[in-house]
Length: 159
Image 1 (spheres, rainbow, N blue to C red):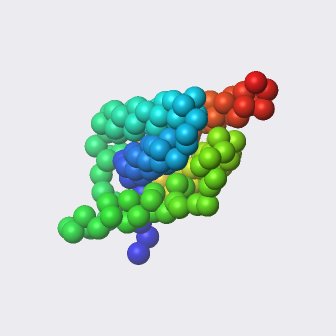
Image 2: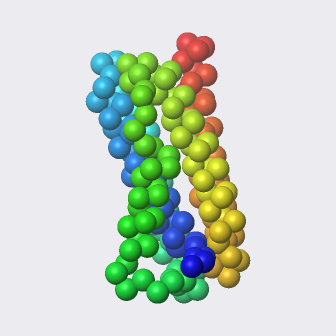
Image 3: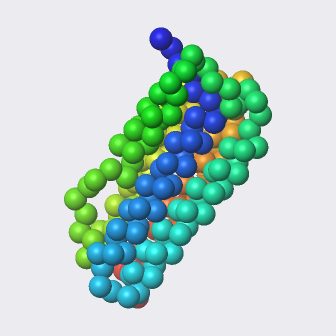
């Protein structure tokens, strides 16, 4: 069976990825003793929460066609599938040295890059009529994450 994704589906995944990112930064904050790093990581976690809200708002603005289900799914299994996909693709369990802010930031930048590649791939699976053009907003947000994280990484190297 061929399944066309909609912008709604991808925004739903984006929201889950942001929740996963917030959890990642929250865990990192709990695993550092450095108050400055803890503060930054908590700010990054909150940023992910705000991005999730942004994606919720953007999803609410989608047209009926961009939200419409493209497959018969009376058990709502597609939601579970999308959640599982989002949970395993980007912020999955990795061996990260949480005591090193440099390692945390590098892992976060890699996760953001992976998410952009993921969204670009998903964009190819969303037909124009189902909101393909809306996915650029997600990709732009993720690119902004990389910019912020890269700035923080450079600041660590150049105190």
